[in-house]
Length: 113
Ligand SMILES: [Cu+2]
Image 1 (cartoon, rainbow, N blue to C red):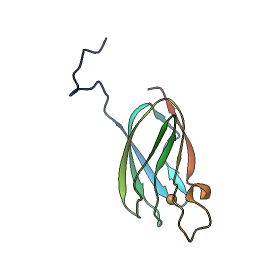
Image 2: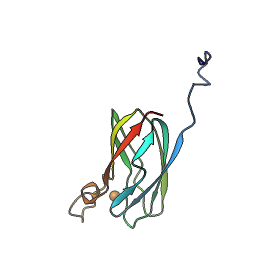
Image 3: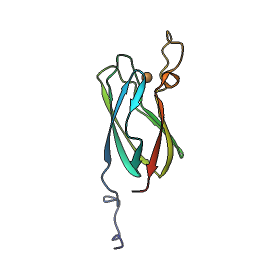
Image 4: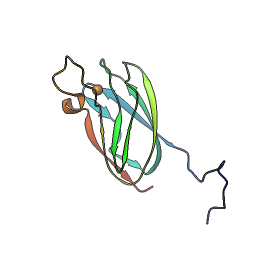
């Protein structure tokens, strides 16, 4: 069925799909594949260090604020089908390598819904 004409107050969008993400030393825990569309990444830092959730690809480059341990943030982005990278870009002055190189880096595949 064709969508009806709509006004600006009612854009033809589906509700965001909530995705749980956990950040820790040294991993980003989330599913390997997700459905295209608007995704609300509910990110919690379950580690002992400060972390950030960043997603890049297909013209998207978005990140949470810096999360101290136990803090949460929600990052809402609209993703087209394709390949993305998620990572933590934090590098503390006393650490030899950034968190992405330590393991907080993985690929994400977004599939048509
Ligand atoms: Cu980190």
